[in-house]
Length: 290
Ligand code: NAY
Image (cartoon, rainbow, N blue to C red; front, side, top):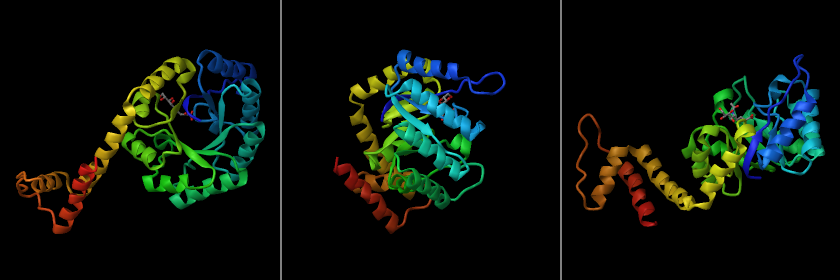
């Protein structure tokens, strides 16, 4: 469950019906020519949200019958209608898809508790590996690091399709959940996703750029960038304290603890309190633990 996966497009006929021949060709092309590790079926690229349930099921059946066990198959089964999502999930499971994925419920401004209960219900009623699909640019739903933690703790939730561009958040998530899988979802930032700790990427453009994408990903994996990521994680722990307390104030304070006169702030900047100074001093421990 890693590497480059194509977010599969769906060929339609002119009258809007499914073009089975085209779909089979696209599947084969991705597997045989683009050499991708997997197919993500029924996502945004697949226009799934424009299809009725029976067509979505038909797409799953055709893709499975064409791909067999050649590559990893993930079925995006999310729907605003929970019963439909569960039915699609069970269909994909029975067909032999390796994992399910579901878009965060969209359109209405659902609370996190509602979003969590959506994944809870799908995973309970399908009992199959689940990848949360987060794409804030389209759904408007941002998930905090803490809330991701709650979703990733649900039974069967194995990872996130992270179609977000906040890469410092991704690095932190991977550090907090090393056993979960994270897929990048902005193809122009594949390199940055790979460097930031993504286990793979799912994207539309890999139907054309599969080989290049594999090249980018492998090049990053085989160099010593893991070390760079570990260092960045340490840096980010410090940066997060700095930002909480006040960046300039706490740098000055920590410098002072090291015998360097960082001086005071210029009015109207305020000086930090004794409590904030103690918080800033946590940085010294982090720096000395390296
Ligand atoms: C999906 O569900 O089809 C996806 O994986 C979405 C990922 C794509 N984003 C969107 C909004 O479709 O591959 C990207 C995107 O097409 C690419 O970065 C080019 O913009």
